[in-house]
Image (cartoon, rainbow over all chains, first blue to last red):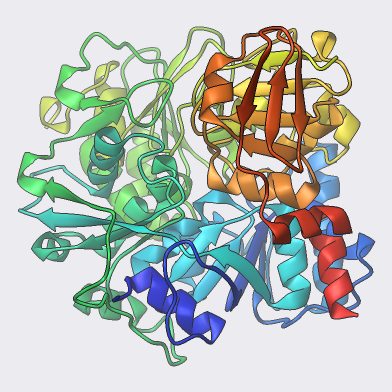
Length: 420
Length: 160
């Protein structure tokens, strides 16, 4: 029986000629990631186990991104614990205030992940790197702590759903609309324990920024990972970022898929996921009645320069509606600087928005944009669970940067065409 | 006496332990906010050994291990659900929180029922309704990991 992309990567990392869905394997890891919330717990486990060294100082990445610059004494203490550990063990890739970015935007940008690699991260959105043709998945802190010592971990080889992408993207449609539509189709547990493997002629329509957003939210369908085949778009993105050798894995012609989902880009319009599950996807054009108090543009899902560009193109020369607060968060320092160079920062400020240095802050209701009771936010983040951005009676509507920006201008959920 | 506390589908880790409390790793402190955003009275009513019963995709969302830690530290001895989100599933095993997938039990057990669980056999007994349900018991390697005291202890043993 043939193997999927994911199965081939796992087989190679397990040193096995082949693997099949459901098989338990131990696989070598190319990278182990943690952030300022999950790493302290991993460090506690690592130290409690009495480990004295890490498996490879170049293959552990620690990114202080959730509550930085630190929002309170407790978060400062957590970062300090990570900082001291990184120094003590000589962790090469430790990113703190000034160099950090939101982890899943930072790692691809810095060339820390290449196709065919196997990555775990103590953060659920670690599945982002599937966009590059890597196998990457989220785990917990204990898994991270163990892997920092061992350099390998156990996996159950996932079955796969093939997502066949066809057609052409419509104006203003981005990767966010594609993934929200997909989650709307298959549900928040539609890919539970499984791989989402993307294929089809429509992939040429999806830029790397789109793919990163799509893979990022595979977890919101319950997926273990979401992976794209390597093509010219991938190779272009890697130029100047990754110089080490890497391997492209393609599915066998007789690879087994549990099901095939058809995604016709021609049929996908700007999409908004209503509270309180990402699967509640509806057309942005039908959101007139939803009055909003805030927009957030940023996060590991939509904080890339292309996302800033999409927002700037809508907000240029316009202003937020009365009573709407706009919070824009470029995901990395590189994106932050590029926004200034290209004049996006001025566009945002002129529109009445604030621009923050990178942080996960509002996405998870940490700080920097918490909602009060009854408030509504159109956000480019990835989750709209109860209380996710603040009060349990607040509401988060997930959308693309273009839709969030347009909604900020009108004061209600809007398709970008409404303001352009 | 293990009382069942019943919840619906897609109970996410944000409602199990809201991110505003993730500036702490203290399990007692985390437990004091367990389930706060879905059931504000949970910490007051939960007793040692009680059981959580839920629907599909329990523990979806963030990878925060603080979620199973908060549940375990609040005194819950087992979570029974129709299905679990995969990261939560891994985390629960790694930190030694017992979990069982059993759609039949998850459907049938009502809030407040007196329920007991035999982890060796996977048999769940509902004394209130006088019924039993059968869940798939853990495979051997997971049982061994739990017997060793969790993932870390197990790894330490294998590296000796």
